[in-house]
Structures are given as C-alpha cells and as structure tokens.
Amino acid sequence: VTFLKTTDGEAVPRPSEGYGKIIATHYNTLEEKGLHERSKSRIFYLRNFHNWIKSMLINEYLTKIKDGKRHNSPIHVLDMGCGKGGDLLKWRKGGITHLICNDIADVSLDQCKSRYQDMKSRNGRDRNSTIYTVENIAADFTKIRLRKKYKDPSIKLDLVSCQFAFHYGFESLAQAECTMHNAAECLQPGGFFIGTILDSNDLISRVRKAGSNVFGNGIFKVEFECDVNKPPLFGGKYHFNLDGVVDCPEFLVHFPTLIKLAKKYGMKLVRSEKFYDFYERMHVDGQQLMGNMKGLETFPPYPNTSLVGTDGDDYSHAEDFLR
Ligand code: SAM
Image (tube, rainbow, N blue to C red; front, side, top):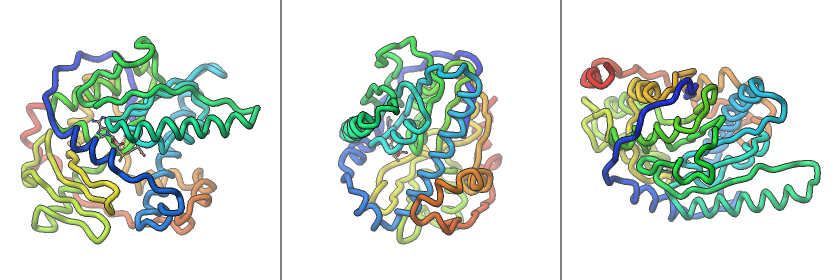
C-alpha cells in the first residue's frame, strides 16, 4: 500500500493501555539466528520472497522521490517497526541520507543498531561509498508521538516505511489515529508512505470457510478472538503464529477505514496491491534480484488466492465512521 502526502493533518487524541507489552516481549525474546540456521527454516523461501517485495517497493518509491528532486538532494526516511534492521541494506542501496529507526522492542532495536555499525565498518573499507546516518527510537508508535523524540523535530521526511507492522496500530481507534499521525506528521507534501499488511478480507474469508475461529496449516495458524461475522473496525484481534517466528496478537485492518484515516492526516491512496499482483507487475524488473535469492528461482512459491472480498455486508457498521 502506498499513500501520497498532500496536506498537513489533524492532532492525535490520547490513547489507552493495550497489547503493546505482549507484542514487544514476543519480539524481544525472538532468538537471533544466523544465515545458516535461517536457511534451514521452513519459511526461508517465504522470507526471501518478502524481502524481494520490500526491496522492490523501497526501490520503486525512492526512485520516484529522486526523480522529483534535484540531483544529490538529501533523502530522509522513517522506518516504523524496523525490527532487527532487516531493511538496513536496502536503504543503503537506495542511497538515502538519514534513517530514523523506530521499534517498540528495544532488544530488536539494539540488534538493529549493531547491524548498522557492522555495515558502517564494512562500508568504511570501501572509500568510494558513503553511508546514511541513523537515529533510533524505542517507542510504541501507536501511543507515542514520534516527532517529539526526533533529534530534529522539524525534519522533513521524504519516505515513511512500515513493513509488516502497521496492523499493530489497529488495536483501537486512538492507536490507529496515533499510528497514522506518526506516519504522516513529518512527511513532506509529495512524500510517500509505503507499507505491507495482511489482507483482512482474505483472513476473514478463510476463517469463515474453515467454519470455526481457526485456520492454518503445519506452518501457520490464525486464531480469531473477535466476531468473524461482524468484525470490529478496531480491535479485530486474532492470534498469528508463523512457524514460531511470529507468535502474537495482531489486528484486522479494515481497508476503507485505513484510507479514511490516511485522508484525515493529509494522505491519499496511490496504490494497493496483493503480493501476487505486485509480483506480476515487478518480476521482470526484479528478475536479477530474484535470481540472487535462494528459492525464488522457480517462482511463484504460492498460487494466487483470489478470495471473495467481504466489504459491505460485514462492515455495514463502518458506515458511520466512513461518512
Ligand atoms: N519491519 C521489519 C521487517 O520487515 O523486517 C520487522 C517486521 S516484524 C513482523 C514487526 C515489527 O513491528 C517488530 O519488530 C515489532 O517489535 C514491531 N512493532 C509491533 N508493534 C509496534 C508498535 N506498536 N510500535 C513500534 N513497533 C512495533
């Protein structure tokens, strides 16, 4: 999903306590595995595919930003829910100037810091290449106004990225507002927000097909803890387990509500795509990168699951909010 920042938005309301600690503890206690260990994981190819998607998405929008700027103008980026810094190299390849790394899990953020230091010292040996600067903010983006923590609160961001994390903001309206406010607040008009989230229509369709509150297979399990026939707009909680790597509560993102919130904070929808469609659009350009990633030589790793959307009937109670 990509939004374009057009104007400045409204103020953020005060949110209440929630699942943040459980989510942070889950990510903080995740074991850091080396490449060899990771390559033996059952989701190794899936992770490679997700990395390919993120690389292509980041590159697509950094290219647009550069095209709209004078040569060598600085590029400032915020990564919300950056985790252990899996995208640090992508930012380097993209030639950005400054990165703000944010995550609720301080242990993950520490790993992100040392990965950056490693990258910087490797980089130092190559005198011709430059590397961006970084600042780190350990904070809950659903509750804390990140701008107040920036070294320079007047910073103008060109790109805000939130990969596989924005759905944590949909725990409550106040938290979704705060998350969106953080995404939009320092983004300058003409700047982009890029994100990857689960498709809630898909989740709801699958759980209904299963005829219970759970679906999955040997690798993943999704267990709903909300009414799947009338999912709430916020706090549509399910427990997601992905091969033990992810094992925590997440929240449905009702897409029209996401668009409405984005509009409130001055952003308009540019594009939303399923991964399969993104692959269809990008695979020619991304062929070389895909060839470098194990398991992606014979793509696609999973078929296009075009499931029936569930908007309208299920979310008729959203009408008031969306008006
Ligand atoms: N963006 C990284 C990537 O693509 O590799 C990490 C994705 S991981 C699935 C989700 C990340 O979001 C975790 O690092 C988690 O700690 C972070 N996160 C979850 N809720 C958050 C919140 N409320 N505020 C900040 N970070 C959060």
